[in-house]
Length: 461
Image (cartoon, rainbow, N blue to C red; front, side, top):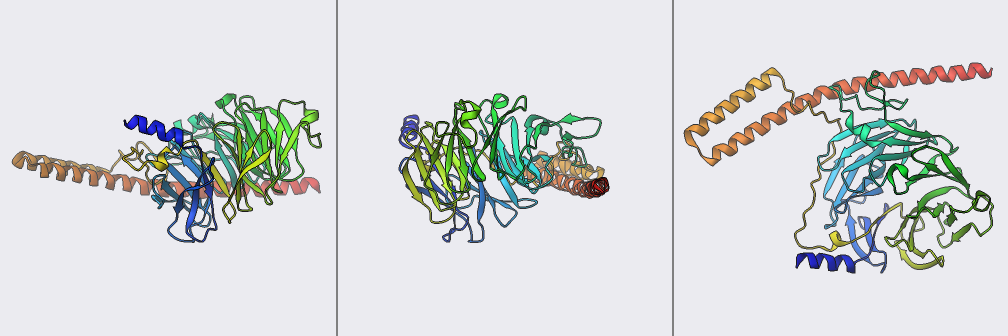
């Protein structure tokens, strides 16, 4: 009966939109709405008006993550409840968020660095740095094997996620911090973690998108230089470059990779047929290669397609979300949210939102600020080992004398507390080494920058 109930609910409910509302006055950060009906399903609230969410990401079908605009925190909501489930402290304000489709990993951009966490345990698995300015866009491939990042330095980088996660940190906690040349770990390893790095844009990158197929998919980048560029992920080849009348703020492609939907800062949405010759679909081409969706008055913040692929959903900073019929280019529904919508994501079933009974939810722990080391939790000083051994011997003696379940619980608590103390000490040591290494690298980068600048000025003179 339970399986029949779940199947019935899944068929009855359609796609669900999560709209990010950073300036709402009722402590509502995110609003869940039905795509088909347009009605409000749930309001996800914050603890105060100051907690304004700038970008959001779905972690599987159970959790919703939102990065605060003015604070170094990530707020987490369980989809069954409206109140904040967890507040995660970060090393800085998170500019962009992305999660894998299965909800296992989460990537967050803090300035020019990209942090990758395991959602279930909260462990920091990698710190990637290749950009020189703030990262503005993040996106995982559908298989989770690649991560695409765009930055204000006009560059786009495709990362190999398995290589990022498999290297392992050293005791200093710096072995997986990626250098600017794209290599990870010690100089002797030279394990390249960057698949491609593109610098074809002349203005900051505003959005990135990856089609289905993993490494065989396509990467679409959008920029404020009024262009969209389509790359082949495996070879890194630039397939086409599209020029538009104004800056591009959002991009989306259908599953068949036939149509490309491009959102502009003017509020228009342009549909481009990728199978037509470049002379027809290029800039200034005839209406045969392009179609325009008109209705929004301000910049498009996000685009997505329904699960059936027949509807286009657009969010704009004019405070509305529109549902379009792709064939007729007509607006089917207008959802007025009264405040600018800065981000949006789509869930293909609302089963988790509507289920009121017992539901198994995967664990989620606060994200760690320091790198996780598999050896660090097991390494303790000799004094800690002696103390732990004496405690263990004492607990065994008490258990042999009494044999009560109470003594068993006490022994478990003692062992757990001693292990946590040893791990905390190792974390403090690794943190000091990490800060010293970061200071050293910053000085080196500053010296290189000054040397490059002086060399360029001397050459021009």
